[in-house]
Every structure is written in C-alpha cells, then in structure tokens.
Amino acid sequence: NAGVMQNPRHLVRRRGQEARLRCSPMKGHSHVYWYRQLPEEGLKFMVYLQKENIIDESGMPKERFSAEFPKEGPSILRIQQVVRGDSAAYFCASSRGTGGGNEQFFGPGTRLTVL
Amino acid sequence: SQQGEEDPQALSIQEGENATMNCSYKTSINNLQWYRQNSGRGLVHLILIRSNEREKHSGRLRVTLDTSKKSSSLLITASRAADTASYFCATARGFTGGGNKLTFGTGTQLKVEL
Image (cartoon, rainbow over all chains, first blue to last red; front, top):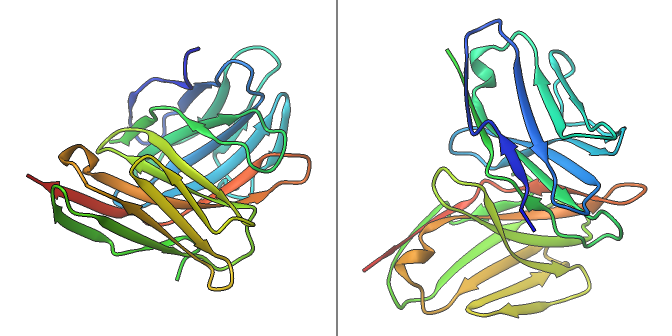
C-alpha cells in the first residue's frame, strides 16, 4: 500500500507564473489536507477536502490560492501569479476521516521556490 | 504564544540520554499528536494521545497529556543519533462531518551526539 504521494517534489517558478501541486492520498483515504511550512516554522493548515467538496479552507489565502479534490484523480493545490513569499514546502496529508482520532499520513512534500 | 508551542526550541544531548520535549496549547482538543521531521523531509507520525488519556507509551516514546494545564510532554528514552530530527506537537480539533484540523507548534530541534 503506497503512502501519500506528492509531485513534483521540487518546483521552481518565476514571479507571476502558476504553480500546480498534486497529491494522491493513500488507498482507501477520502480526506485530504494541505499544509504549508515556511522555513524554520511548523506546518500551517490551509485546506481540508473530501471528494469533490471543500470542507474547510480557513487557512487558505483568499486570493490566488485554490484547491480541488475531484471524483477521479489527485487533489490539486493551485497557486496563481506566484510571489516570492509563496516559497515554502507544501505538504499533503490524507486520512480515512471517520471518527475524531484518525491519523493523518503525510506525503513527502513539494518544495516550491519562486525566483 | 501560539497554539501548540514547543519547549525547548532546541535540545542537544548525548547518545543514551533521555530527551524531554514539552508542548503547550490554548484551546480544547480531541487529541494531541506528535510528529517527527527529518531535515528536508515529510512528517512521520509518532504517537496520538486522546483527550481522555493521561499517558501513552510506544517503544522508547512516552507521552503525557494534562488537559487541565493544556500541556503535553514527549519523552524519548535511551536516545540514539538516528533520533536527531525536529519534533512537532499538533493539536487536533474535529470538523463537523468528520476529519481533524491539526494545529502544529513551532517544533523542537533535537540533536543527539555520539
């Protein structure tokens, strides 16, 4: 059973370009979470999705950022018109989601560098 | 202070010694989890303790939770050089309809020297 997969592992973009980060949850997991980690900091929650639904996006910047988790395929975190401040590691986690104690399994992260 | 703030920020010990890390938080929680992150890598889940539990063990790890003080501690016994990593606590609050929102602390950087 493969773990959470994220790609690309490293992504370099110039200011103003778009970044697309992909996350494939573990088999059998229908809940996906995205987190952002700035250098020397802990992870900050961005958004929580279930299949075809955004459940909570309270940690997502209001502009330029969007996320989806379609019925088929991976979850996508999309950052439009990237700026240098978007440079960070973006982690995806998945869980089965039922009940309050389900463990979140994390992917290896995508390290975004904005030049 | 932030939800899930670890103390100390950095800890350096000799192999074989015990390492203790503390975490404080502010709001009510469903559970508290500890994660480990090696430099430049993803997070590895270590242990989860529910809000109605006081202590939990897993191998060389011992976690305590004091909900009255809103604090938790992680003890690693007989540390090894391979334990060198950053350790994060994360408090979990449930979303309506399932799932948990994890709020991470700033982490403790542990270095175990030979």
